[in-house]
Amino acid sequence: MPRDEDTQLEWLLFEQSGVISTRQAQRLLSPGRVRHLIASKRWRRICRGVLATGDGLLTREAQWWIAVLAAGPSAVLAGLAAAQAGGLSGRWPKREVIDVLRPASRAAPALLRRMPLEVPAVKVHRTTALPISDRQVGRPHRTSMARSLLDAAVWSLSDEDAVSILAAGCQQRLVLPSEVRAVADRFPHCRRHALITGTLELAELGATSPAEIGFVKLCRRHRLPEPQLQVKRRDASGRTRYLDAYFTEFRVHVEIDGAQHLDARAWAADMQRQNDVWIAGDRVLRIPAFLILINPDEVVRQVVAALRAAGWS
Image 1 (cartoon, rainbow, N blue to C red):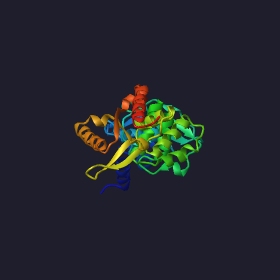
Image 2: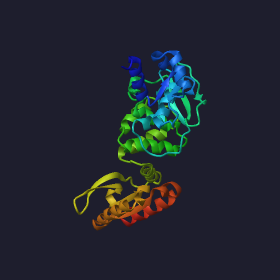
Image 3: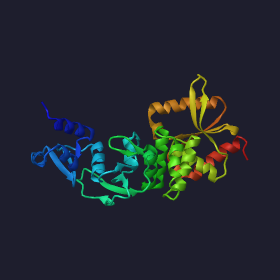
Image 4: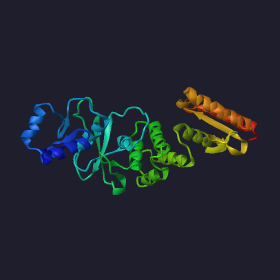
């Protein structure tokens, strides 16, 4: 029959994706047995104070556990990694560190560099503001989705990444914009605060992608009428359709095409929806998402022309 220590150890390794701290191991096993597991290559040292089972490639979950355990007691996964652990999906320029938060009362190095090549460096942020509401019970422990998205936006390498991460979290319905705003209000002097709150304001209005957020900003900057976002419409067959941006008074519909519109089936569905809108008498503009970023003046020119043709002066 297996000993209780063995059962606890197996369960702990299962929960922690095959990663364990030396402190946890010493609570369950004798020092001699720990040394034997390492010598027999059933376990291996990852960094100071952290061990892993086997010799295969580490999963992303294992890397998160290594980061949290290496940062010491009371540490929690934070930023983009914490948001991804909570279900956020998407692609952003690779950030070569895993962010971890721990109380400021506990000293810690800013960056844990001595990691194997298969594990990114671990950046430890110290904070005096990490209430229970900002913590999420998970494996590993992490910050809440609202706090994770805010921190990810603050720590992002560019403004574009910050906007994209916030928009993705709201679009995927992992959090409400108001929840992230409530956290941001507690950090009025954080980096990119104005950009973050402005992005959340547009997300509350219905902008569900960076391109839609950029389009509304363009309209405001050039004093154009402000469009409604994600407007519900019924087509000729009675199906509910969502219009990306709609100037209701002038019946001008702007469809912002992202990369997903390059798929043949999505393209066919878009054409059908566009035809239904045209049949009803609206003007439709199709604008590639990348054009809003690289040539905003051309976007404004087309929108102004459509609005003027519809009677706006």
